[in-house]
Image 1 (tube, rainbow, N blue to C red):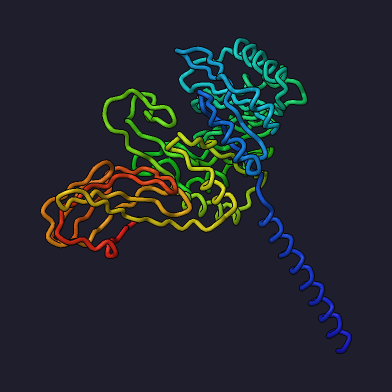
Image 2: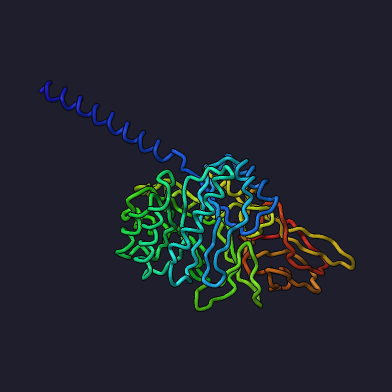
Amino acid sequence: MKRCVAMATALLVALTAWLAGHYQAMQTQQLKPWDQQVYLWQRVWTPEHATALAASHDLFSTLRVLGLQVHPHDGFRVIPVNRGLLQQDSRPLWLVVRLDGQLQHLNASVIHQQLMRLLLRWQTAGLTVIGIEIDHDAATAQLPEYQQFLRQLRQQLPASLQLGITVLPTWLTSPVLPRVLQQVDSSVLQVHAVLSPKQGLFDGPLALRWISQFARISPHPFRVALPAYGMGLVGFDTQGALVESETPLRVAGYAQELTVAPQQIASFLQQLALLNPRHFRGIVWFRLPLDSDRRAWSIATLRAVINRQPLATQWQVEFLPQQNGLYDLNIQNSGPIDAPLPKEIRIKANGCLAADAVGNYQLATTSEQPRFIRIRSDQLRSGQSRPLGWLHCQEITPGDTDVIP
């Protein structure tokens, strides 16, 4: 009997030690920071790039730089990147080639020739190019041709260079996708796009399903591209959504602003950590924020999300007295992170003779509580303010103002 008790005790101790070690290993794996990379997608380089690169040097290990575009109507467009600035930055680079989804046929020999010429130019400038990423919004029916294109490109690239692609969620059910992935060394699953005017740019639960599905397919390491930006939805044409991002479109009418809240991405990252998909290696953020890029998150907000810092928002309504009892109103983001404009602002006031809203808001008044209702969403950076409207009231009590995010 004593012998059985001793054996049971020893077994229990061993099991406890194994569980403790397994739990510690899981915790270590979850706490291990993911590799963070970023896309530089601007077609025009400005002095702001130097500031943005310096501010992000400790945040992103690798830069993925748009260097070449191929369009069916515009042909080849070499992006005039600041090679001297990238050489000074010294981080490893991926040269990204954007092949427009409207291309009916991939002229492999001509595209390869243009790419190799640009690659040589970058390498001669002293840039540390570690890979080529092909970003092609191919229709699923075109994947067999895309597979052959990648196979030929892999044969022409030096063995020291990695070859990667951007993967679209629409490809995940295609039986050709595994053969496409066999031609490359790694991939980036893009989970942000214009889903619909209602769904916006990003759907966290849907993105997690895509990642789980892709993890079962991918034979190699992959990363996930996440949005740190907004865009204006102008409308739709035969090719899909008409959007403007860092570059405005010359289209009449208002653009519906589609934004992604930092809290939404932070919540998604927590779920992704629990999922811990096979072959997952890290995040590629779209895109490097510039000060003048009003639709991109600020670097401070992006840093807070990556470092999993508190993301509390704080709003303040500014009452600016004018002549004849008028007040101009601004909504100010006084919190530490960027945030979408509040849905509604309610102001306690008495004896209001007139009022109106401007910009992104419309007025819905009652006898004692003017209400400013958001009609168009937009992102407001930390520390910035936006005109809200004006009031002409006998008495205003700013302390009773309610802001509904």
